[in-house]
Amino acid sequence: MLVLEFMAVIISATYGFLLAARAKMDFIGSFTVASLAAFGGGTLRDIFLDLHPLFWIGKPHYPLSVFALCIILPFLTRLLPRIKPILIYPDALGMALFTTVGTAISLEAQPSAFIAVLLGTITGTFGGVLADVVCNEIPSLFTPTPFCATCAFTGSWLYILGDHLQWHQTALASATILTIVVFRILSVHLNWKFPPIRDPG
Image (tube, rainbow, N blue to C red; front, side):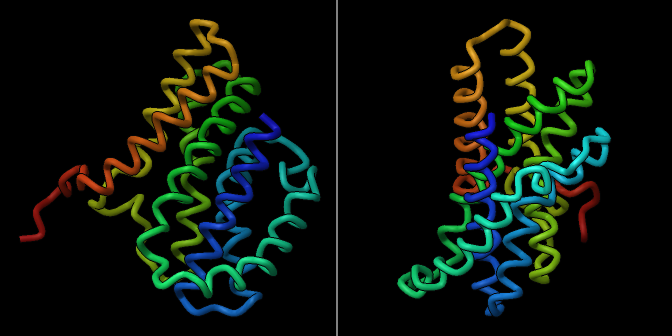
C-alpha cells in the first residue's frame, strides 16, 4: 500500500500540474494545485478518521517529491501540443490508486464497510475537486458529466468484496485499480453519465 500511495501522489500531482499549466499558472500556482490534487482527498480521510499526523506530513518525502516534480514537468509539458486530451489518464489512474489505498486504510481504521467506501471515494476524488476549484473549473464530480465518483465508489465496493472473500492483496488491489481506470476512461469516451435531477428547460 505504501508503494501504491506514493504512485498515487506522483500521478495525482502530475494531473494537478497539468491543470495548472493549462490555466497558465506560474511555479507557485502549479505547486499549489499539484499539492491539492495529491494530498486533498487523503487529508480529508485522515481528518475524518482522526489519524495523526496527516499522511503527507508523516511522510515528508511526499511533498518534496511533488516539489521536485513541479520543477521537472515544465520542460516536458512544453513538448505537448495540447493538454486537455491527456488529462483523463492521470486523472483516472490517480483516482484509482487513491481510492484503493483510501478504502484499505479506512477499513483498517474502523469496521463499517459503507464508511470505508465513502472515505475511499473521498480519498480518490476530492483532491481533483480542490484542484478544479482553484483552477476556476466546475468540478466534474458535481455536474452531469461522465462518471467520476461513481467509478471510485464502484471500485471501492469491489475492494470490500474482495477483502471479504480474502483475495490475495496484490490481486485485490490490481482488480480495484483496473476496474476504476477502465470504468472512468470508458465513461469519458462513451459519455456515460447520470441525467440532471431537474431538466434545465
